[in-house]
Image (cartoon, rainbow over all chains, first blue to last red; front, top):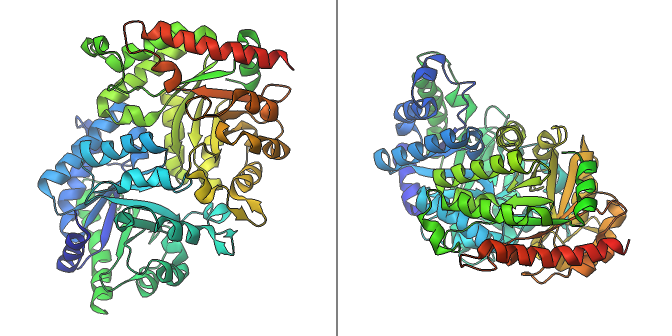
Length: 272
Length: 272
């Protein structure tokens, strides 16, 4: 998917919401456990109920890998369902991978070609030759971890490197990589005040912003400091939406929560 | 597995060799492609032929994930085969994961409990709360990326942070994490001269050392600067061993290459 198409979808739906599919069998409604594939059944119901309110879905690989082969089957079914029924959705494999050359190429093929995701999240620690194999894929996007929303972010990411925080070095250095136009970045909403300086370094890049809601970040702040003329934001919510209810009404409850966020996003978009 | 048991195995076998199972269907001998599960058939033959020469096996997750469900099945069979036939082998899931709290816990359970690996490789970028969930598992080991053997290592890892290279900050900071006694570190052999300073920070920790052979690192140098009184080294070789031949003799050829390395290791061990 091209960035332009994503921007069009955001304008059309008046939403830059990404829904995180962190599907956990301990949290899905009990009646689904009788299904042949409860993970997929849950995802399908959530997607069918919310697709008109969001522009992206982000399955977190850890949740699927935790269930072994059963989890991989559910993941494959989920991405196939998205690509066949809602091809307008931007899909993110939240994998946080990072490995050298030929191993990165393997991962890139697995996520982009075999599974058919539009994008994948990548950790920057191993540098250029761990990131560029992902960037080589046309109309696919590599979402690099820059400033994450967890406490551990202060261990290394905000440390000063040559007079500048490490996450800023990651932003700057990665912009020199080949095909860097295919880069997006993860920037946590819990650190929205950092967005102003981030926009000085990467004025136009799309940002995937976790941490709104459950983790305490404010949508208003994120938009104030992070929004560009082409929006440039995908704001993710996972648990706040998909676990809004654990009754038979779970999908409708998820849609209600997604609608609340979409309405706030609509307001922010109309401020432009 | 306890570190003490691993050290005993090293002394007994006079080897600190780890064999990387980067199994690639484009590189395995053609006659194996007729097997029902060529990936597992290849791994099993390599393991049966080399287990007496090494103390560890390291499947690289990317190679298995690249084949989707088929790959995961082969991975499960491989680790199950190792744990049932060669429980004395230290097993490493080379996953380079790194995610926040509950997601890390998911990965930890998947690798340590469901699959039964002894250890997993982890990227440090997200800090404390992305690493500690792995450290919480008893007699399991978390192998943190410190200084990798690729060129991209110079993008961030060797940058100065508060007067000290980032990888040294990773070593020091991670030693303050809870259950840090369960930490090991990845340090590339291509940067053996760095090992002296690394040993000033972590005098006793086990190091997983890739990059000997194919990537140009010298075993002698690694031992000179990195070996401790309890050895403290696992030296990995992947392609140099497992793809020594692509004929019907591939497993014997792998054993020959493994034996060469084991003999060099024996010499280094006897220098102590």
